[in-house]
Image (tube, rainbow, N blue to C red; front, side, top):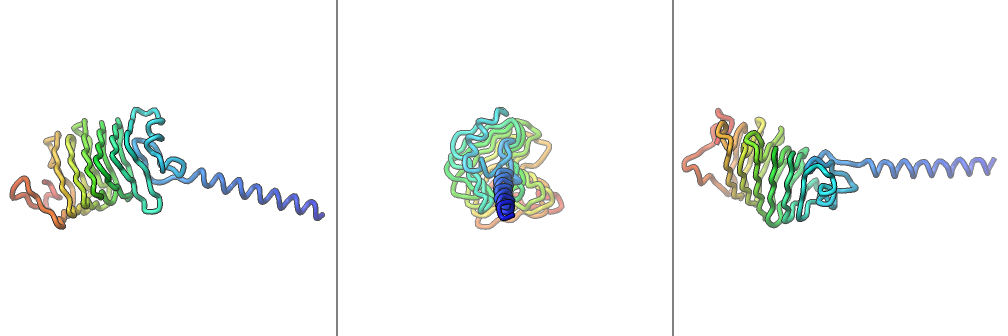
Length: 209
C-alpha cells in the first residue's frame, strides 16, 4: 500500500508540474505588434518574432514589452507593416531614440500613453488609415516628439486627449476630416497649439482641429 501511495503521489506531482509548464507557455497579453500576439515567450525580443512571422512586416531596432509596467518600448525602431503596427489594450508606449512606423493601415491604437524622450514618425500610406486611435481609452502624449503624415492623424472615441510637454506635428492626407477628431476634451499641459494660429478646442465639434 505504501508503494502504491508513493507512486500515486509521484504521478500527481508530475501532472502538476506539467500543468504548470503548460500554463506558463499559454501566457499571452492583450497586445499585438504588427499582427503578432505578444506572449511571455516573445515579449523580450519582438523584433525577431515579427521578422520571423512571415506576414510582410519588418522591424529593425529594438521592440520589446515589459509586462511588469505594461509598456511597449521602441528604441531606434523602424517598423513597416501592411496592417496595424501596435494594437493595445490600455498599454503604454515608451519612445527611446528615433523611431518610425510606416503602415498601410493604422499606426498605434488603444494605448493609454505615448511618452519618453524619443521621437516617433508615423507614416500612413492609406487615406483611410489612422496614425493614432484611442479605441475608448483616454490618451496622454508626454515628453516626446511625434510627427504624423497621411490618413487621419489622431482619432478619439468621445474620450480625453492630453498633451503634456510634447511636440506634435500632424498632417492628414484625408481632407474629409480634421487632423485631430472625436474627443470630448483636449488638454494642454506645458505646451500649446502653435499652428494653425488661433486654433482652439471646440467640444461641440468633438475636438476637430
